[in-house]
Image (cartoon, rainbow, N blue to C red):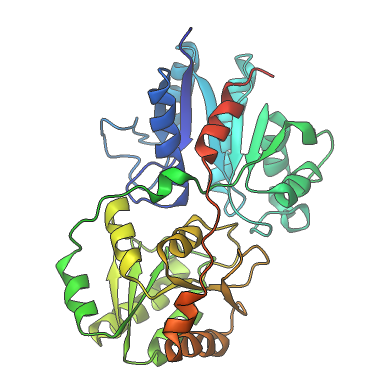
Length: 358
């Protein structure tokens, strides 16, 4: 069997977030089948050289490496969304290199129904950029049939038959080894009766004002651990980030920049509540992880939450606090009622789409 060579273009851990975990698992599975997979890292650590991926130092370096890998016979698998401008620009560069070298790229479009520039009614001046990516891609993988419909209606000549709805979460995500947690987390949760954890990034979409207000009024019996809190990605959110630091100093929360997959799932198995504040995500992998681990999930309503999630109105800190307080008041009952989601191997399904020559 002739080996195929796939270039995954997107963020690679660390941090271990939704996209990067997916790319890591796709790479592992492709290599286990005897094929070759390389990752061109466009994530936050893209400038750091490592054996697990190929670094990207700047825009020119990115373009030259795209050309290099096409000359070497790699097929492109691009990862992107419509939540910012920079990502679609990088996707367009990869799509153009693939098109001009006579092998159009496959693309995975991440995220939910409503993003900053998606669906079409939100596109504004970025419309042609997003549309060109959808049009040029040979295949598009997305999270569910409704997103497929919105992609195919984004503009003229986007063939719905080339769009494949595949759930982002997969059985591999639940594989982990129990490990020691950072000491500051252990010390903090030792003093609390209940544990609430949440993943966030300091950027648009995570409802940080609401989260901050909730933590200020969260009952003292519950500890709140926030993971993924790295650099401020939007300077407008600097005051909110400072407010979170102040709440940490006051003992109301603990901020953790990055956890490994093993650490995150070890923490999730100890959690009573998983809080998901992002309001423009899809079927969040961390939500499915939490339900699978037996944590009660309280999440912003985005019309895509799975069965068993307790939804609060996005932007409404009072409603969030009310939902959390209700759960804390009868934790045993809520935990007993958590439905286990059906999890299948969608990584293999995605790889099959990539390898299919059609």
